[in-house]
Amino acid sequence: MKKKLIRRQRNKILPFEASITKEYLIGRIDHSHHFNNAHRALVDTLALEDAVIAALEMTRSDDTLMVVTSDHSHVFAFGGYPKRGNPIFGVDDKPSDVDNMPYTTLLYANGPGYNHNFPSGRENLTSVNTEDKNFIQQSAVPRRWDSHGGEDVPVYAHGPMAHLFRGVVEQTYVPHALAFASCIGPQRDDCERRRQSYHRQLIECPSPHIVEEDAYSAANWETSRWYIIITYCLCLLFMMKYERT
Image 1 (cartoon, one colour):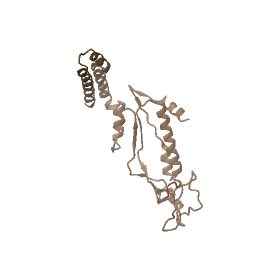
Image 2 (cartoon, helix red, strand yellow):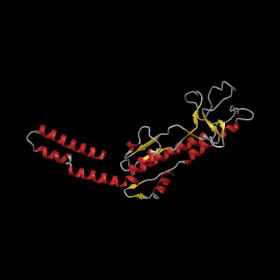
Image 3 (cartoon, one colour):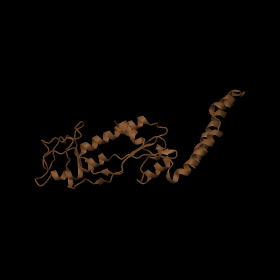
């Protein structure tokens, strides 16, 4: 099913000259977090992982750049010290040291989950199935929707130009890097010039097997062997230097 949906969407992609770009927004994860519904948010995250794996199987890593990121986080956190192996949607094995009632491992700083706490005090979760897909996590501050968080979000990249997405960067950097890698927008003409120059240098540099054939006819094999290595390395260094400029 995931591959069918990806194929259907891929057929609608419009080409930008030599590049093809497409953006997919996985909105259900965001919606579930806004509702303080951790179960659905994490299940949809696993679905996103399956979709990425399916897309990787349908594309080639040498001609397809795939970037997975987020535009923001949520006020979603781990609470307490549950034991290793404790269900992620379950409650901590030790109750609160204030009201002596259990609390879930996953919590929100704000959102609709607060409505379950008052006016009669915090809801007692002892007999509540916190692993139900419709369970609303408890939150500390009442809001109709949970708010976005302030943490840095990861950027994962795979394929050509993936090296552009490394380290800590400003959020505005990501679209510029995507445009540069895709040769669209202001980078379109520059990319074409770099492509032509790169191909021209490839033609001018002798290939290793041609140089090796000439080397076999030399009287001194040791000298010829170093000639092969040095010539080929110089060509590679020249191309790398030109790519940077």
